[in-house]
Length: 89
Image 1 (cartoon, one colour):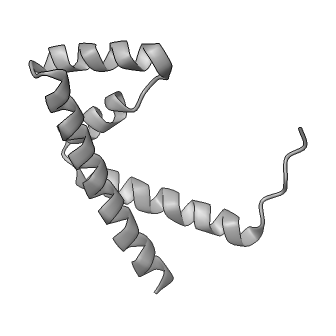
Image 2 (cartoon, helix red, strand yellow):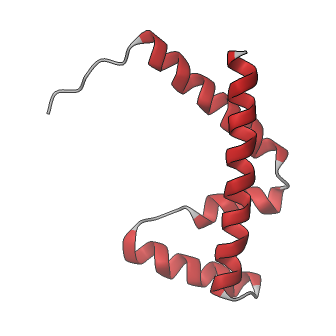
């Protein structure tokens, strides 16, 4: 499948998004940053098993882990949106 070339505008947008994501990740504590990275690793069955292990390591229920990850993701999304708005404004 041939790949479409990325336009300079979208390339710049992608770069801005990565810079903002890095900035937002740096604002998290080391524990929260590690949780986000661990939580969103892997795919399919391996992801399910990994999340179960992660919850056990943290000594919390799987549902509590999901809630923590959801809250962290929501705060990252808000930070990312604010950062992108600042960059474009």
